[in-house]
Amino acid sequence: MTTDHREIALGKVIRRARARAGLSQTKLAQRVGMTFQQVQKYEKGTNRVRFTVLLDLSYALGTTPEAMLREYHEVVESQPIADDELAPEDRDAVRLMGLAYQVDERTRKAVIDLLSACVRSDADGS
Image (tube, helix red, strand yellow):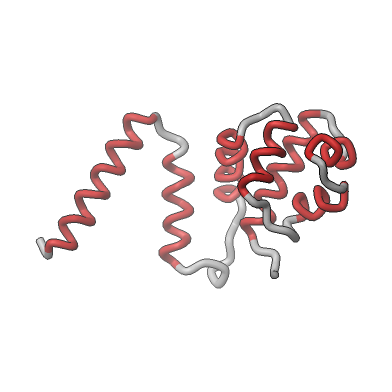
């Protein structure tokens, strides 16, 4: 498996959360029942983090998966992504997700409704 920007971004989030919690890789590993080498691989982005592992890590770090995913989106938005790393539509999707987290829930729902209406309109040939 090759390391890509998503694993690297999530690794940064895990490392930052661990630093905020004041834990070493060894202490975090003990809390979630894994080796410090595994924590190290997650933080470097060399291993993918399964959702259940993200749950365990977030709770051990005194945060929530939602908070970690919000920070993940901030990291992805702040990292320049080379043109050859993402297809244009994927780049747009990442940008949309990052922007969606910056507006209130009501506005986000209105934008989603608008996009849904556009998709329906395109599908209907209108």
